[in-house]
Image 1: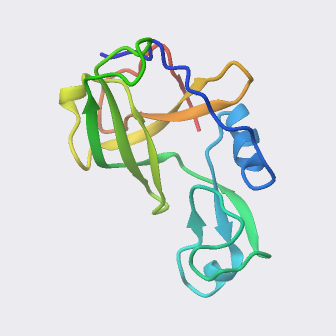
Image 2 (image 1 turned 90 degrees about the vertical axis):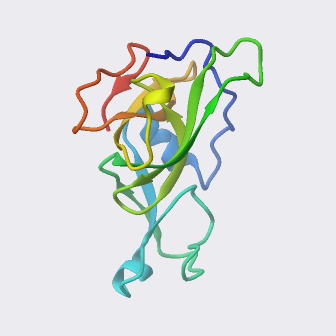
Length: 157
């Protein structure tokens, strides 16, 4: 199992668009920006990353936030063998995770050896706490797997 050794990413400061998302991470809650107009009209309503307007209809006045189940599948991934910084332990896995709500997150996969991951593996959210109280979502094997999560992550959604 690969841990999060050295994983202390620089993250942007919250702003008026991303602030609610970052605040939810302090409580280990994964939220998605949603558009009420799109939901009413039968279009996908969730989007990530947060934006000032809906990517589906262009609305800027009907955006809100909804909780995510924090479950999905691995859409694509790569195993990093050469760290971009000397303080990062390798190998580690960067992935696109397609949440059950249809939104794709770029994230890290944890909880099993990098060469054991496969496309369409079920995953669930876990959290890496940052020094400022915020947290980053990472994903670990989902309910179909018995693999334990990394001790450096905290499970929950």
